[in-house]
Length: 309
Image (cartoon, rainbow, N blue to C red):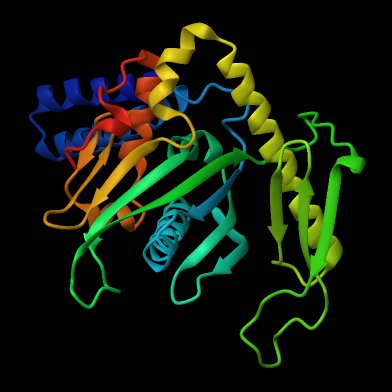
């Protein structure tokens, strides 16, 4: 398709040059711009070659130590990923969220459904660091907050994940609500604990306990499958060294809002000065830089130890 479009544009350009028709040249310019966008998309898609890359994504956000500061930061990240998904035209569903005592959230789980959602969002797994003047500090001091993001592919029946029912503890409880006629008065929320791995998932999106249980099991299967993939990756000693800076629990990215504005990915070295746009969901540049480094193996030096921001 790209080759055909290129040949058509080339033929039209030769015709415009022969006839010295500026209106045709304008049409050629539009065709080239369209071909350039198509090429960028095709190049980006070529980087997504793993079997699970086309899958939907399950994103889990956990506030770090620091109370209200980190919980507010977790809410900001939740909004960032929701905005990114919406901007892509993807379906975004919040499965579960635990509010903080004063502001923000302690944790949240959401699904982002669309073509190659996981392949693109896998770049976001790790610890995200925020530096800003705290809106909760009466002395207007600068605070640093940390929040963890975990991304897993939504696994369907094409991928076998065996779960022994004896390994599960399933608790039901009343879903949270703000009161009024819409509050849920039944024990429909579900929490599933997988004892061998220690993974705990919760879901209270639906009013039906059965539906919440099914959704929670889907999240659990995806988390277990991602853990399996990570174990397989670690067995490859040749890849191990390039993974050190991107392991779960490392600081992958810093968002600085004071004394200047900048967002820097410590793994790739990719830097953006427009922090507000990033927090509004403009993440494609970070995703492309991450995928490029995975292919080339050329990661930025310093990683989480980089204190430049």
